[in-house]
Length: 392
Image (cartoon, rainbow, N blue to C red; front, side, top):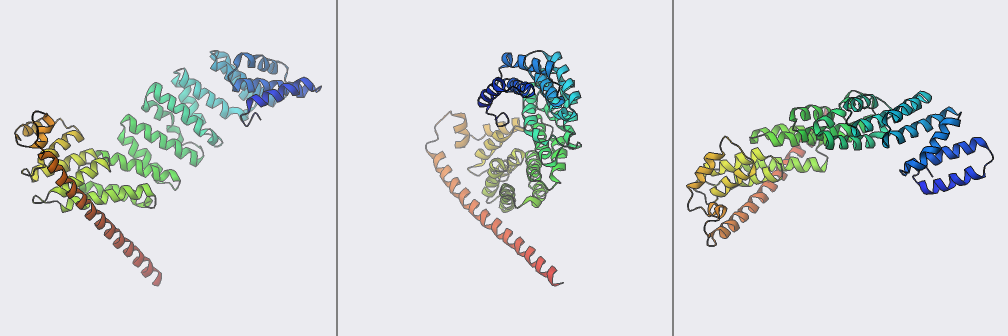
């Protein structure tokens, strides 16, 4: 019952056993586990006498180690840090098999008390234990608390030893992906590329997620459509994953649409820009495509909309002032007028939006068809290659 988390039923059964048994060894064991059950439910005041008694009278090394472990946990969680740490050390000395549990307690305590030396030391040792895999979720929870207290950078550093330690592969990869996410939150894009790139080389389920993380980081930074090829190549080995296939499809659509745009018919650039912004989360690329539309087709009725979209997508101090100044000269642009809210657009804006929406839908359908055609062609080439290889 205790292992299943049914603490109320466990307490009742243990109390009954301790009261009825005439075997002193069984009574000592029952009273020890009463203390542990009470500690589980946070009733430290009632738990402490049971644990003190167990430490005083228990001769069994295993039970003594458990008593020290739980009294140590109780101590550090109720403010008696020094005494609690001493008990944790005694627990490990009595039973070296409790080393992993003690290391985790030190990690959690280090974060809770802002003792970074303790936290980082415990993390380094814990993440080098081949039998510590079952604690991966608990470690993750502590790291999340560290991120709230110290920020994502230091929290990510807590997980750095997992890369070279003997932590089991599957839970290790989950923790490393969490580290990558924290590094991304901290803005350390170079570290994200390095860490996620390393994880992506593996064959575990985490490798797919790692490729997606690197792809997302690269998409946020890139500015030219030509750079998309590098991202697509990164995703290619994981193309069987639905999320990867969806992202790769959007990349192809942007490439196709960018190639179709011309000064005489610039709408494909606008469609590509919206896809880059909304589907690829590539704001710099989207900005460039919006501005290409406006510069290549300055007389288009949607040129002002494109400039406004570029300004809203991502700021760029190098050119924003000039772009805003250029908007000032567009006195008759209904989109600029709407943005200023200085005069009504007399329904012109609504008509323009209807026309643009229809063209966007048409171009998206064409892009979908073209991407599907290219995918079928590539699959056909792969099949032909496989057949030819089998005939040789």
